Image (cartoon, rainbow, N blue to C red; front, side, top):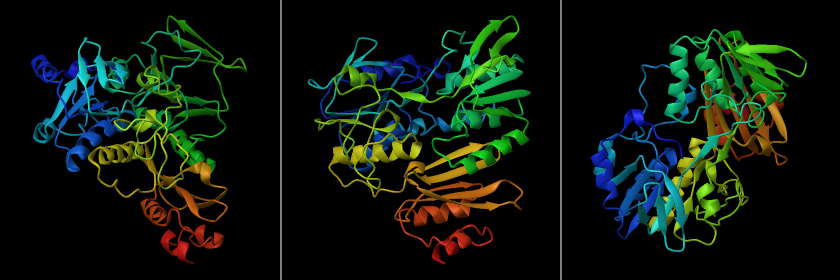
Length: 434
């Protein structure tokens, strides 16, 4: 889980009061208080759980939304709480904040905390998420020069350097969602921003090349330099910043680096408890650890089957997937039917541009592009079909109507009339029915 945010600490007596009463029966413990953890707690009550619910997190602040961290750097904007304190009080959800979990034993249903206390559970749900990776050649550099964006402390550290006027030149490593979102959000505050990525296209793991290129062009129009198919060979700390060297002997000096090259699942607890190898922790359709009927795992840190995507476990790193899995786990604990599954969807906000996606890019074998070149903002939709001509993916840039139609027709066999689908003047819903 993420490190503590001591700038927003709860009163110590409130934390201690919670911890003094943890060892009782009929308890569901939730480890991790991001979107998945809070949703699991809420759903347990919605589905009729009458026992105790203990929500543990190693940050002191009330659980907050993480997606905005890379999308806005307005220092005057407070963190957006997932739920107010009154929600937890009304629902009888006990918050154990500022508490790091160090171990788990499934055989005796015990969770160990860094402060030496233990918690016995009847059911436990792990929602520990993932942690941004640090990669060479940046591993050994000062943390005052190299940043990631995972929690509020990360964003605050970056904001502090900007507000002090010490970040005039920023390098963003990684042209994925986080990297492009942060670059766009900082374009008005940092005079020189350069984004580099070894891949040939932006957001290539999840987005069709044509959509990625339109996003790149929009950022370039905002004054951001983007270098694809580029790697950094060496970094040296100098008296005036960081000097970066590229394979072609070109160099670039910057004041700081933001790493956005992916994340590793926070699966250490389960690996140590004997539930598998790193990056390979799998659960069943009820989000139960294999061989366990009282231990669940959801979100970024786990591989789970999606009810609409077959039985193969996969890692879907999105708020939508985490929330859906949290509801599934809560339903299993309460022995009620799981909610109706919906098509997986994702979004990315990059400055004024909004990218909305449904489905999985890798399932598509054929793509059709709709591009409105007359729109004021870059407006396009990439539609992905499989060999059965089913719509399996759609990526809509600044086009909410296409996104709504795509969600409706996802998984179906709409008309694959190329002429109609590429006609941006024809509503997508109508084009699908031509």
